[in-house]
Length: 258
Image (tube, rainbow, N blue to C red; front, side, top):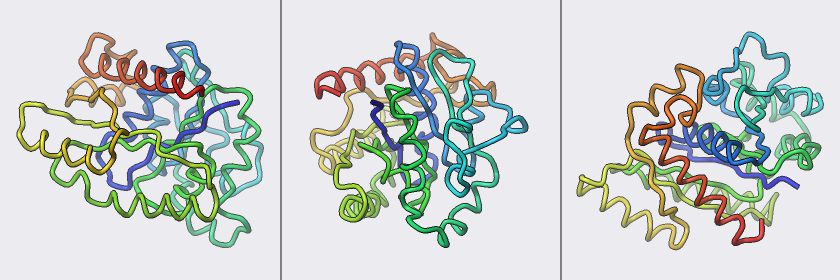
């Protein structure tokens, strides 16, 4: 049965989608069956795997708001062991449409449950907000992973994020736990970075990954070529960092018996 993980931060520009795409690709490259569900209306994970949005027949919107079988929305990518449920522009209006739907917080959980036996890991690339789409992902997930940018405002909004998770845990999903916190856009030369890292570790004791993701031009370029960084430039610092992160992530899964 798949382990289901939401990749979440309501603050934009923190490397959330880069992490979703890169981790999914790296875990797939290591031989695990991976599904990445793009539930961000911007659809950047979909583009990051080179999916032509004009060729999407069914998307995460159709699963969330419609009644289609989740399998009908799954697309194979060109990359080892990775499938994707793509996002399209219709998803932008899903929050409003969900308000009228019964048990609206469980739409994704009920749909994706049919895919659990087909994958080792299912990742959700969540939108940069704490609305109904994100609540759906958290309700469906075993754990959530938080990428945090190593800059001054990194901790801004984290209290709100954790309050939302606690509410989801109380109302819809008592088993969800924090998977870990990944530091992104890291520059160890800056004193500010060290201060932020110290604060992050205070906020999330024992949950901060040892691997850090540096600022890297190649990481920024990869999405425009429709390739995860480990395929776009496997010799770059960004690719090396995400491969190291995948190793650390998978090692923790083994230690936890996942």
